[in-house]
Image (cartoon, rainbow over all chains, first blue to last red; front, side, top):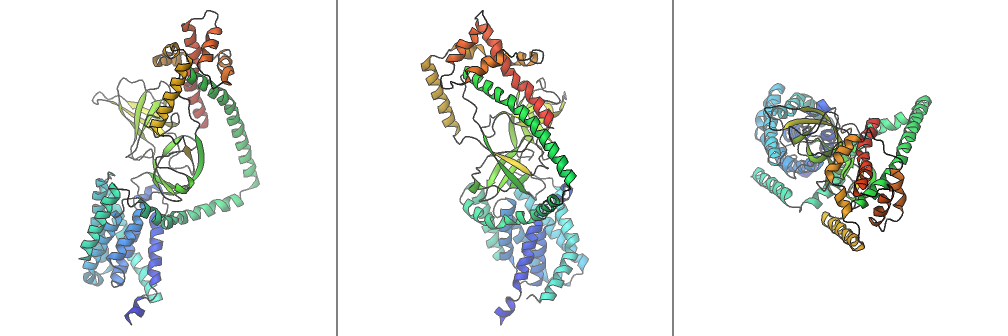
Length: 163
Length: 369
């Protein structure tokens, strides 16, 4: 019984992750590079809220490893960050579900901002120093995108009855 | 609990990845699948280019063809000169008893992606380990040096550009041979020369070429042109800013340089052996002494006034056939030319062509731009 419901249309979740991965490497104009939203983190946050039994920290970790290979960073760097994001989202899950959309965005901003901070530390350790404040921009853009991503994915989930 | 395990696992992975090469195969296997996403995201542009080339109007194509033809003619013309110059260079190197320049092979690669991180300047190209690319391999575009390969994957590789803030390259001012190190600044249009003395002879418009001293980049490729030199009396060194000659954020087709695969030691050994065989033949020990390095600088200044005499070039190029016995022949030919056979006469004959490449090189690159 559980197995049947758990596997229902699960491939769509993975499809969204694949699309997110494409988006996270798609070429952007120079000035927009700095604003590139954290697509994978956004998708993970949504699916962790919607399907906590299916998408969890292990999924986040695996996706993070994939992202590391894509970006050429140290293996484990993005894995760590995505795991932390998912952990925070899961920890706040009960509250986040009750929040109105703007409040969710705010929480997302804080979580992603923290994650970006960790990212900054890790890149500083590996020798790639980056300007500090500009690093928060992706978190901001992601938070602004959250309502749209959320609506879109919710529609997708209803449509295909993903469980 | 799970968080703890995963965090520890990622930290361990990071440490292992940073310190050892244990995870390289894992990474390359994963990249086999994942690097396709760069290819996929590049697809629209590729398709657009394909469509554009399908529907390119006839007049445009004709105009482009004309342009390419004239460009080709120009390049061919330059090539003719290059052949004699190369010949000359080989002769002079034999005179100097230095090892011959290796002929570098190049292969065309295509850019398939930019690094998504805006703070690093890295690109991804469509040639990888299976195509014979090696770590640290220099990458050029049509105008100059672009960077070096820093990560190898089976069919793709990552190239660190010159302007990345973690990248530095040993360069030389083409005009006078002044050596410096050009560091990236994170700005795609700017390199900075570090630790250049305030009194150094470097000025706006100077071409910087790679000096080959770092054993990584081949010598003599254009790197940047000096944009401004600021002499600030409060600073210990002059501030020198340069603009890369390569179109770092515009080039789509790049050249991978395959130089000889010998290591520095092997090269040194080969050079030493060549030297020994020369000494055994009794190649004149005076000749290296007659062309000391500082002598080049005044000659370079004088060179625009004194065009290379046609008499000097044939004299240097004609005995090019017997490459096997170098240094012995020039000693006979060079004094034979001027009736008064003095070592002093050898010097201008040898130095003048040596000064020629620095003079002509900026002209060629200037024409290309």
